[in-house]
Image (cartoon, rainbow, N blue to C red; front, side, top):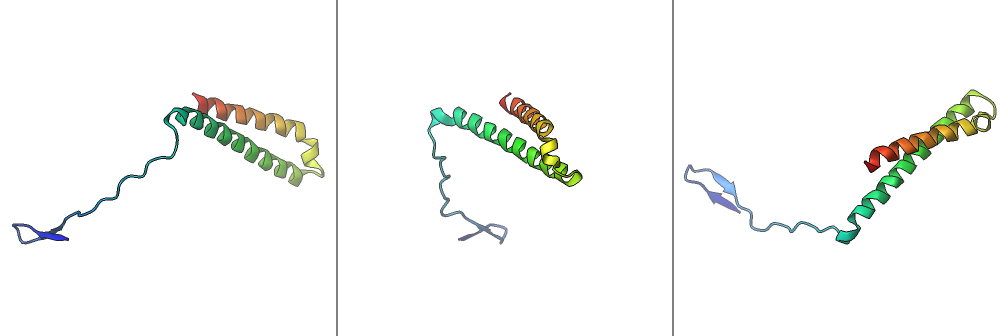
Length: 89
């Protein structure tokens, strides 16, 4: 709906405003959910890093993924721990 102003212009008038949607979760579980989500993000980052290293090692050498398996697992575990340490703070 438009409402006339004294200057001759018209301005819109809000007739109905939607209510804000509520989050569907218990208030007591908010902190636990945050921690679980962040741990999952750290695990995903480590898994993505491992896949990148796996593919890179495979491109470089024959059976490179197997030759570099221990090194790649070590490095990705370190990256996951770093990410988790940053998140938990």
